[in-house]
Length: 183
Length: 125
Figure 1: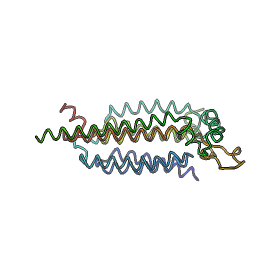
Figure 2: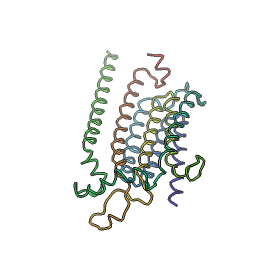
Figure 3: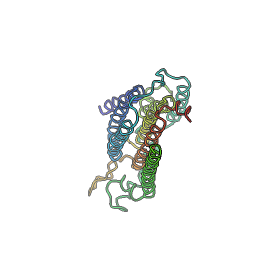
Figure 4: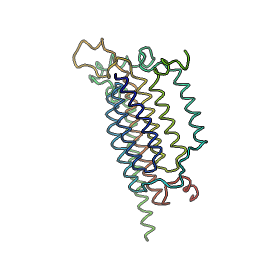
């Protein structure tokens, strides 16, 4: 039964992604991306990753949508007319070729959810066995983020900081240039 | 194992969906001229990659990697792999940063040139 729910959600994802590609109204496209992120969060939760699901619902469906709406408000809502709706052959060929390579690679992987997949036996168990004794945290994902891979998290925070500084610098510079135009 | 074997196709269904989503996102990124539309395509590709990683870590009949507080049942349970979840948490935040920076570039480009059309921008430059 959960299999059926999962299948419907996955098909809905494809439909929403294609719709976001098709529509000319960027605001509609951003809202579809938000719904898409929410469905993706449900799928993550169903795939036993509650932490990722929460983050995706907050960041992917929430903050990203706000950013897109802000950007659309400051630019234009509709796509330019020069963008023709017909399917272009060159990009389609590239995309199909890359999809074929990815499909060949995915075909060689162990079946989804199979207990003898390498991801299921090799690396997870070490964390699951010792993380509680070493760190005292019951949520293993938290233990990995904050303890085993804390330098990763430090790097992530550095990226957030750098992007914040970058955006502030960009807009300050933009304002200066605008001031110059008025003079 | 035949490629058209139903068990083979259904056994990998999450991977096929993430590949189709990557293809849709990549097409948006290449073929659409509007910059904001391109960033929406980029977001679709990134969530598809998260779906791929999270599917890798999942096990049939497993539960999320959160141990019971004080219990002896811990050994009898199968847990999903926590490592992909931990990596994707980092990746989601980095994705947000990329989107934020890209959109602020788009806003500044629009202020200066009055268009977000990549083709027209190339002519103006």
